[in-house]
Each structure stands twice: as structure tokens, then as C-alpha cells.
Amino acid sequence: MVKINGKSLGYDGKTISDILELMGENKSRIAVELNEEIVPKSGYDEVTVKDGDIMEVVQFVGGG
Amino acid sequence: MENNDKLILGGHEFNSRFILGSGKYSLKLIEAAVKYAGAEMITLAVRRTNSKENENILDYIPKGVTLLPNTSGARNADEAVRIARLARELGCGDFVKIEIMRDSKYLLPDNQETVRATEILAKEGFIVMPYMYPDLNTARDLVNAGAASVMPLASPIGSNKGLATKDFIQILIDEIELPIIVDAGIGRPSQACEAMEMGAAAVMSNTALATAGDIPVMAEAFRQAVEAGRKAYLAGPGRVISRGASASDPLTGFLHD
Image 1 (tube, rainbow over the protein chains, first blue to last red):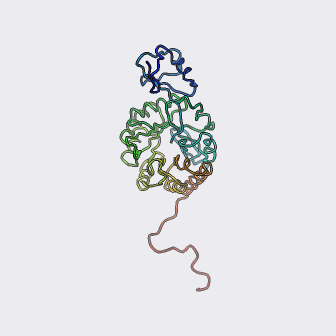
Image 2: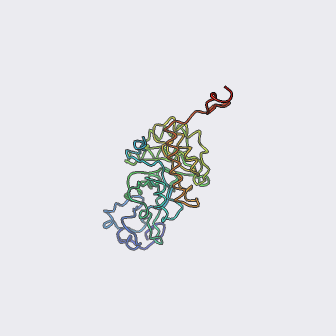
Image 3: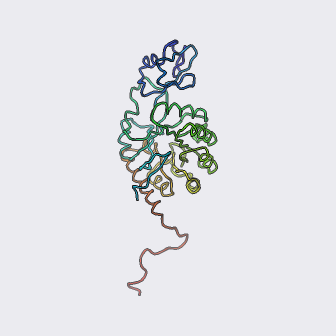
């Protein structure tokens, strides 16, 4: 299982690109962290996730 | 005079001295708020994506407005650094407003951790604008750490209480060479104007607008207040006399001569 934005999902072995597509994310509007390291956009197609990984997908929201 | 009066942050020039927050109001009102506020810089936060919301705030911010991501949610320097790096990865520039809070009741910034985060991020090439509790020693540490400005709070975040820390902000304005940008707690245009008259380089406000009856109209009122205060500061406010009076009219020339 992979923890993505706090939820455990059975996405083991998938690439970041696959996961973003499943999540319905617009790649130009988000940033991805895998185990607290940023994954650059150029790595989305190559980097795969494995059991126990923690992935965060973030975007800008309103704030002060 | 005014055309040459630029606010310079990290080598970038701004004509506007009012930084707009984008929290707590409808995305649809952001464009109007930016326009009426005359804002050239807007703050944003970084959060997990939410698949239920398809709208993205970036689609509502007019082109040419500089984004100032904050590190809200960070409880220490390491978390702030992590958020700042993610913000930069989002691809909207190198500006970051450091916001580190350990205390969730008063939302007061942790000055010590803020200095630490400023040092790390300035070294990584960020244009660092730290939000802080107005303390001269911390402000000096922030200068040494490579900050591009210092952002003291006027009163607790979201309180609209105005310049509760006025005397201490004045000390920063007098002693610190970096732009002092008054952030948090400014609730009325009159308070923004007063901060600018004191010599603040800019004012940042969010809740004052977000909780106003008419957000675009309040945005315009803030723009006018900040401009008026800046003009008054540049003009040099008249002196105050401690006792008595000083006539504004010629005392001779009629009736009792």
C-alpha cells in the first residue's frame, strides 16, 4: 500500500504519472513529494512507488 | 515623484505597496479584489490537492501579479523549508513568505524558527519575506540570515484589531534597512494608512477584505489608504506640539489691530 495525501491506496508499482491520472490531477498545477523528497516533473513517467511509500500531491490554495 | 517611488523586493520592483491575501473568500472575487486593490503581489498557501474541487486558484489570478506563497501550516523551520520547496516546484517564482506557528490559539509566529528557515531558504536562492513578532533582535537576525523584507504583525492574524504593536513596528522601521511590511491584524484602511505614515514599506491584508461587506470596494479603500499614507510619509508629517495651540490663521490684520 502507498499512502497518498493521507490515504492508503493499492497503487504499488505504478508511476507518478499513472497515479496523477487516476487522481485526475492537472500536472501543470501540482507538485509531488515522495517520502519527503520532491519529484521533479521530468521524473513523473519514470519514478514508481512501492509498498510503504508516502506521497504528497499539493497545489496552491487561497491563503494569507 | 511617485513614479520613482518603487518598492523593491529581492531585486523586483513594485509600484503597489498593498499586498493582498487570497484566503477565506470566493475565487471568483479574486480578480476584482486584485484590480480594485491595485495589488501586484498576492499571497497563497500550499495544501494537498482535493479531487472534489476542480477549480485552481491560479486560474483566477490576473497575469503579471507576483505570487507570494506562504508556509502556513509549518510548526518549525524544517516544515517551512519543505513547504517552500514545494511552492517553488509549483513553478511560480522564488518568493516565499515564511510563517511558522507553534501556537494555534493566538497564531503567533515562532521568531527563532523563522530565522532558521530564512537562513536555509535564502541560501537556496529564495526571496524570503518572513512574518514575525516585532522584535528588534530578531529583525536584525533576519537581516543577517538574508531576508528580503521583514513582516512584523500588527495584531493577531485575522483579528482586524489594527496596530497593537505600533511602537515596536516603529522601532523596526527606524532601525532596519530592509522594507518593513506590516502584516496580520490590519483591519481597516485607516490602520493601513497609519502604518504607511509611520514609514512602513507596504501593508499586507487578507481578513480585513475577506470579512468586509463588499470585498472589491474595501479593496479599493485599502489601495487609497495605502497610497495616502505613503504620500504623507514622503511629504513628512507635520509636528505635534505637546501643550497649548498654534494658530493656523494670521493673528493680526483685522478687528483688534
